[in-house]
Picture 1: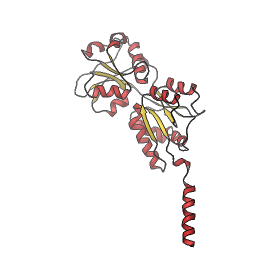
Picture 2: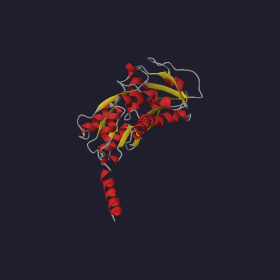
Picture 3: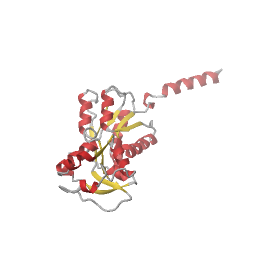
Length: 252
């Protein structure tokens, strides 16, 4: 009988000891963070935490989901305006927004091709496309596409290629079009090009040609995981930033 009571007591203590923190945080993140954030999640889990549930898409799509009421704990955007939209909607926990990553914008071509296309004012992108199209994330909504449009506009090239853009729903969609050889050129982040063996970089856009590429992270007001804030703090810590640097991101 003593053993039975001891077993029951141990079971009850075990149940009480299971913390709410065992619920993994749900993280909505920009598509360009797939490999790096997954690695960060694995390191976090190896430290004894619940592996975060990661959902990747264009920042624009994720922000709209959050504004429409989708439950999530953290949001990582590839630009400031979409985080601004979520914050203006009253859905960002005060004091938790931090811009902690940077990136570069590059022009890529299929890995099987040769040559470069130096990027400067008036560079012959339209002629280089031949009969093909320029793969970009939607330049009217998705951060990578907006940065790309800004850069091409500043360089005086946008009017010549605007009607020849193959619009993708995310930067990874644009990357895939080039990797499959369905587009001769595409505009993506340097980290995307690094993650895809099917493409090669043929030119890098001057940082002065587009707004700074920054990635803010924030805890959302609907956060229900007690692990979420800890994971956010880990991401912006020196150890977390080191993981992103290994994938080619810059950190302040």
